[in-house]
Image (cartoon, rainbow, N blue to C red; front, side, top):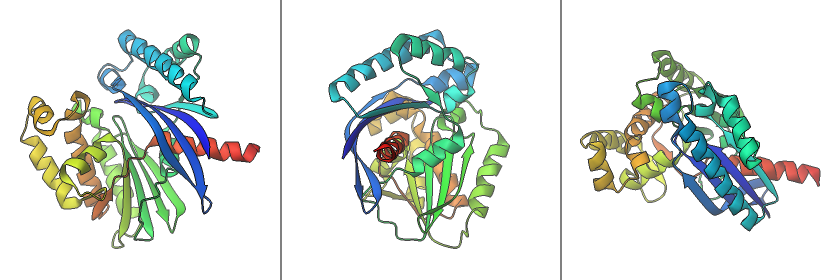
Length: 294
């Protein structure tokens, strides 16, 4: 068992995960020690203005300084920090990365959508019962949606789509991206076959908690119902009625609609939402690399 620290700077939030990684039957699993989430909301800048503001850059610097202090306490054996859609699309991303490095010593790496999909799909959870041969891994973020398909635990295909919850809020999703997602879901596998659908991200976890089952699943009908129920209420009403954080209350409706489309086009009966994400996949990558070097 080894301890690692991993960071995901997404379009809606930054996450630091301190975790133990262990191996069972040649499969690596992540056990959370601590998770620190900061609502940076970089996508609110990027998908509206095209760049990250000075205010958000300052927030990033303070966030990484805090993360450094937490790392000093836990003393992990390895560390990795990645950024996704918002920094991929920001016109001033190079300036942001250089400033963070100068101010905090952290080398933040921007990964592309396919790499993000591949890393997320490596995240495992010991409690997932995969009933079928086909498995879809879906990660819906603020700026993009990553999909990976496996057959009998063997990787088949991955794709990244410029569809995200914050982009949806700003009406910034191109129609051809929806067409690409639908076409990929309908053609990558035989949709008459049953499929395991494992989804990551804070929105699907919250949707499952509010409208799904206690076994970490939510059905297609429950997702459809969630869209209808959430749209009945204003932003402020959703915060009060469902006890939502402000940075979830606005994006949870677009998230529910994105998942509704995915389930419809992919012929998905239900989603498993085991609270896994990019930080878990990064921890497994660090573990694998560490094992190779021993």
